[in-house]
Image 1 (tube, one colour):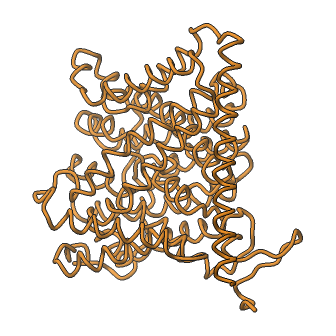
Image 2 (image 1 turned 135 degrees about the vertical axis):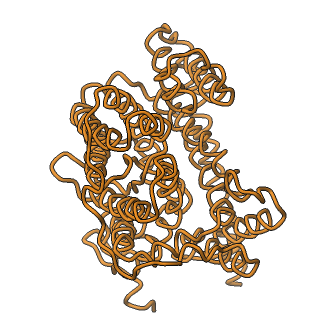
Length: 483
């Protein structure tokens, strides 16, 4: 008989903890969710702080101001995650969505800082966030003009955009002096192999902690190899309260318009993230209320972020990749991650532990997670159907989105605002091209639609047959063991 604490009873019947982790509203002991929440925090921690560290360098902030940014970034990331789980009115998605500081705004923020100062950035963040809230609250109407194939393109482009991020981390971090060294490659490879071994060899609930297992082993290996920096722990106060309004907001129309356009791009990314999350976590399309709430939630918490001096937030694709790997969507799990982020903002030494994770360790884990997002996009494209029209939309939008950002010089003579938005944003380019083609190209012929539907059914039948064969093989193996 199984221990009583490994089971959770619901009105629909009795489920194991492993089953309940895959159910959004299932009630599990809170302490059992902490390791899975910690896994989410470790997956996004460095990416959450990197834009703040970079913008602090551009603004030439001193050490104390950098600490304020880090504390504020942790606080609002945790609050934003909790808001998505427990919406306020129509603000929040009620989905297991982890939020963090977005890189989308960095280039524009750096340009504004150089010209008008960091106060103008804060003012633009606060006003622009309210604009995204309005976009979210009206998403039920404008979302209808975006067909499923466009959402599929956005998700796929998100996955492709993250591949380079994972590869750079795998080599030791972008700009690292020892990038690609045998030490970094060894650490990343061992971390990756540990993640895979745990994912395929572990059983039950432990199987879903594969990323955390890989991170711990990779961290210990990096520690033994002298790749963990002690600088993160020097001169820290044990307790510190995040600063409210550490920078005085200044409202400049040019900065506000620039950020307003970027908030529109971010809303599109959230559309894709929401579609990817519901696909990999719940095997369905997002409800209109979920999409609207996710966008409004991002906008609201981004405005709040401005009052703590930090950059806007968005849903983190890294954590969607983690959901794709583990299938853990329980609300209490994600809540524990959000609370860890909030607590870390009050205890700088806790933040320092996460901040000391070597990039190679993160790269070993994230390279699999990011690939899962791209595969999720492929699956969404397949569901939309491989009609001639859809193939054209996917091929051209991905080629232009990914191709143009690999050669950003193509925007050399474009206006500065266009360069800021598109030169390094494959998602925005792919979305605009896909949406324009979806509006302009004529509809598919009846024969083309029928052929695509038949191909889709054939794929589903093949998948069902493969699943049945797997069940038969498992049954045969069980019978053999019983004998």
